Image (cartoon, rainbow, N blue to C red; front, side, top):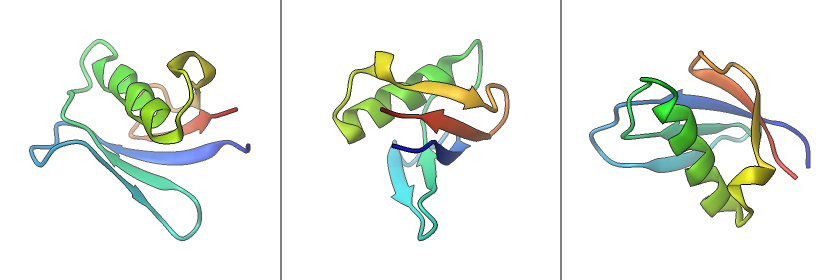
Length: 74
């Protein structure tokens, strides 16, 4: 699969959810705050469950400290 563009919305009060956009990118709402990588860990955990793959098969390849990221999936 190709890399997926993801826009992360950390600190969401409404809960964690994934919105798919028409261009194939995702908007991911996370409850975790971007402190010490907590939001990145929560992002990979949520995407792994969504795609049905182990978390170890996913990687953030661009945007580790940004809200706009690129995630590589198998």
